[in-house]
Length: 217
Ligand code: PRP
Ligand code: URA
Image 1: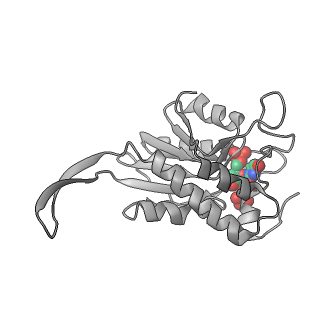
Image 2: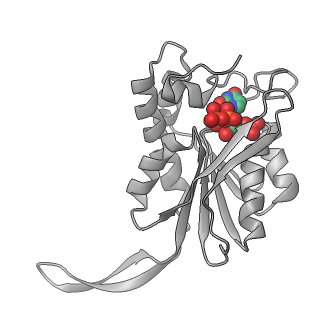
Image 3: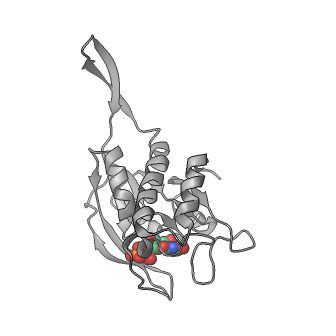
């Protein structure tokens, strides 16, 4: 699949198995989500532009490279908050634009309730963070907000994606590069979503598992 990058690594598999486990409590869940975000995030950032700079070491002055881009991390509330800290550690100079989106449990359509994306995003590289790419509705809504504000380079970082979610994004935004630790197809017939719009096998409701709530279902 073009512009889809599945991070295949034994550590990713190991941490993902623990993350999915219903017996994993929120404290470990948070740590695992952060660690997976770091691994997937490093891979997603490997093509960031760099510029040459001069660095004086204790031994000599030499030419080095540093990242040369205006970057914004866009965590989708709530579960994207579980990826924010790891991303800010990787990119301490990045801005963070929070967006609150909640799926309507009946229609599965995204409902926006909070948005801190600035009016113009023409000059940024946007990294959208949400661990679950299910129908793709929430991520697509954020990607649309960014393109409406002039953003040309958008990277989608997820941990578990469904084929349906990936297709929903690429139907409207072919150029968005999607990085993920897993593409789940456990719903039968190559599908990733069950009748309630949950990813199968997935991990359940990421926001509830991260914050210890049980608001749905
Ligand atoms: C979850 C998840 C994604 C969204 C994915 O959020 O964190 O944002 O669902 O589903 P989609 O691809 O079908 O849009 P949810 O709506 O449960 O809100 P929450 O994080 O506040 O619990
Ligand atoms: N949101 C989640 O948190 N999990 C799913 O499986 C689907 C949407």
